[in-house]
Length: 124
Image (spheres, rainbow, N blue to C red):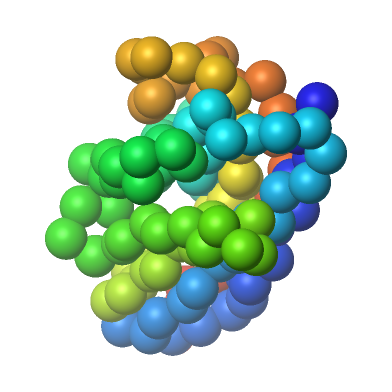
């Protein structure tokens, strides 16, 4: 079982940047996909980005494309979500998740381990 802890959330103004971190521990996750999802107030959970740990291959979801990037640090066992030009509609709890899969990275049901979430609020 992989344990995940997110950090880096906060309250920022529109146009600002944030970096979220997801530190992994527990059993080996070298074959895992690590993803970021978010859930805004009154909204369903949606896919933001994912990265395949072994190949460092990123996949960016529609709401994040062009503004967010995802990267991993093998030595620190950490996956980062870099968020730029933040908008009020980016306000949400952001969750890190991990799972074993060949496809379907954008579906939350494919992930078996989840962090507790970190709040991001974008407001003027």
